[in-house]
Length: 256
Ligand code: PEP
Image (cartoon, rainbow, N blue to C red; front, side):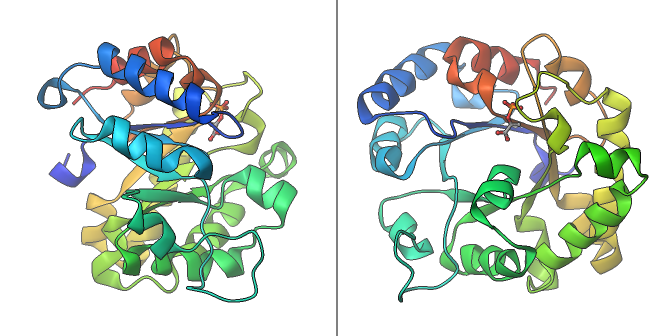
């Protein structure tokens, strides 16, 4: 595994985390994680916009990255309610999750917008985590590869070849998100190897170096076998990340 592919475990709080809750969480997490140099994985949390600055401050110097859960592609304009990349970097945020299936499903996030968001994040110095994944119907209809091909190609289309490896991709089968129905390690491995091969169509070096995470009902008791798969470079964790103890146990399951 290349150094870029040191595993990453990223917690997505979704719609959770008042500033008071976020402060308690960060303090608790830091007592549970080993020192940065002894951590088997890079660690990040995706907090709501209103708690990002607080998380940056609380986690400063700990090596735990702070990510937004969305970002607009434009620098400014008539986009009420949106937040730009510069607004995130100004407060010290490290990256942004882009194209989460909940944003695609409930808030009209499109592949076309992601085509702009991913390079806009990179240009601003943010680490993008691009989420892709198929629905249950698509999997049953044998459409998984077609869906992943479309999402990966569109999302990366405007990223220059030499910056491709700076993107993290999260393969999150929609049928496994928040359902308790985790993909088998074989399904996760197969889909993630396919995602990596799609990156390889653009650049063999980038395919070797890019991190591809699995997401979908990862818990402390199923993390180890998923994270042990050769192409799985970590996990994007939703529900289980709300409990700092469970989240720290998932981090401990990663093999460096
Ligand atoms: C997610 O929010 O990206 C996710 C994978 O959620 P959960 O772990 O709850 O399935």
